[in-house]
Image (cartoon, rainbow, N blue to C red; front, top):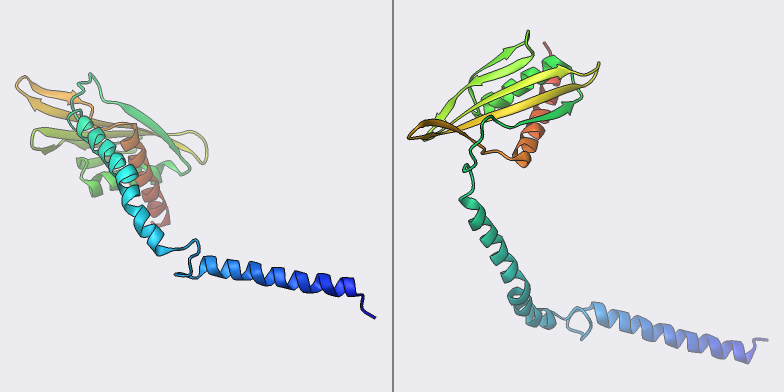
Length: 191
């Protein structure tokens, strides 16, 4: 025979489960007064926009405006050089660098000097600015090459051409990423 105490606990447990399931359903079904109430979200959005989004946008705009007049103002005696190591043979790296320079129009008359392990370009003139790129490649071991990249940017002034810093470390990193993609493209070509 079933114990009356056990039967009572079983019925109480079923009632509790039913209540908790109804609470869960009321929280997830829209317009039931639960947590996902669209009216609450509609009232909260303007407060969030005023309190959070507008100040963030203003700070970003002020940073952009303050930095805009700094581009190309730094006069340098020689161009910055940055290095990056690739896992590829030297011939693929040289061809990839030359391909990127031609595609992005960063230098004109791009030439590969296999004897000196370099890729050089002539100046590309655009308004009062001219740009030229030089990259040297050194085979470190059987699978790695080190690339030393220098982008020379000059501005025309009353006294002649002055070397200026136009690219920062982040732009060089982006340049190296594009070269990395081009290396894989060059490696996939059949000679």
